[in-house]
Length: 353
Image 1 (tube, one colour):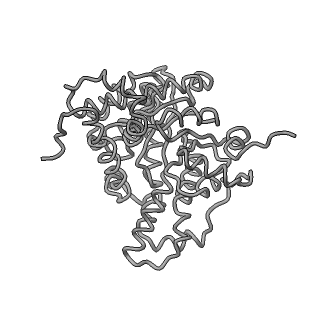
Image 2 (cartoon, helix red, strand yellow):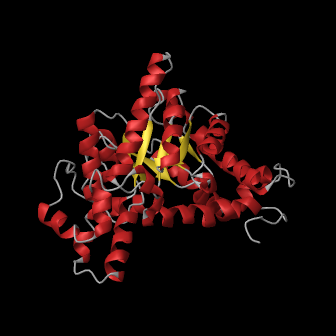
Image 3 (tube, one colour):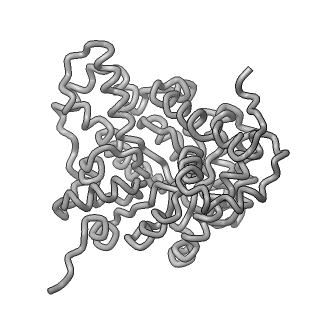
């Protein structure tokens, strides 16, 4: 009897939809590669979790990092340790796909997200770690010229902290400007992955609705993230933006199933991968099935949904002020980057005074 493929295998093998692994733990990376993952998301939080989960695995390399490094440089060295390990694991995918996949991500210091010059300098250092290390930076105003410049130099990028149509379009347009410059200079064009964090957006809107006593069913709010992502997908096609959408921060299997068949790249945590496979979802493409207009109409009673859903919902000046962007930025900083600054050393961080 022919072995039936699971849902993730079906997506990868029979639809344009692909997926990356969302964890920096070595054993989970190996399992994900065996299951068809084409890249790996690494960030400060995942790096710190990996160091805590398997300290003995990393300790010999951690011991080689100077104890005298300033805190920010130590965090960067630890990110490099794990990002380059993950990149080596996916090197065969990078070579097999001609650079379309096979990346690990080097995420910039969240504390410098509003400084274009510092972000560019750090991004260029990260790029030196390897050609299949993609630079991950936030979708805020200061990052837009950095995205353009990196792409113009032939460097793969991934934009994060992205929860809205306006942010995605701004990132996609910055990518396209960089593509034009790269082609004019005869530089190979590398990919851009635009993260859409649908599950996190849903959670944020639930909090906003509860706090403001908005009369809307939670079931409607659980469609918000997918509504935004589907709209971005449609607009990218209409505008000829070649950047790949990367849904991440998923919370329920519907966040994946309702997008199935789209030419996009999901970032999936190990527990989510297991949850999807165990759910034994029907192998059906749903990317072209729009979220009900009635649901969209009800969601519009939440102002923050309108900011996320409408093309003109925010100006670039407002990207960094969006509540869920600030919430996630704080998480990246205080549960990821800040602990890395002092991990494995007796040096004290200068973040507290």
